Length: 196
Image (cartoon, rainbow, N blue to C red; front, side, top):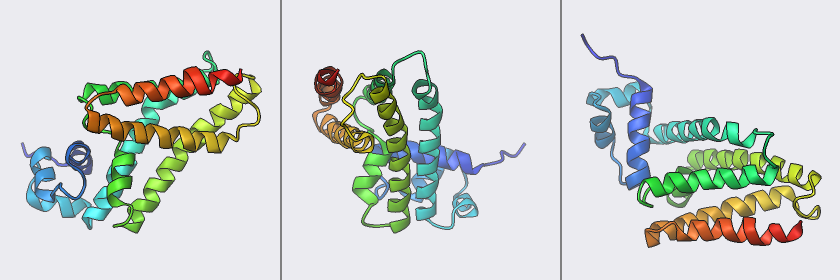
């Protein structure tokens, strides 16, 4: 029986390779080989590698929403504990791949933002989704009086993401999750804990 190849097979294979090697270093042939898909299949689903890049970003964001949705909406936990847990889950994922793959959004932001405008725009949209999710919880934490009311929620959310991405970059270079653990400790045990 002939195997039916899907767009999803190609996206998943490509996502895994691009997380390891980067977008520019990953050729279409390597993606198809990993997906065990015939050569002509790529262009049946994608008009260009740029369109493929957009598809992997969408898949990554969709998977992240599935992973973090239950945590971020868990009303049994205080809002800032949910924010902290979301970062701790990301750190655990990073540790599980020997501190090598990083975050697709951060990786592609560094590599692709100046090369493909549509990819830069999609990355910005994706980071804004993350920012809004954290910002809503930060605002809730202010109502719970667990962090200072004078902090601007969106600014704090963007700063958490920026610091996390920087710590992730350092962790990749160090091959250690220590910078990520320091990020969690400094923000959640020190800086934000002092405002209670």
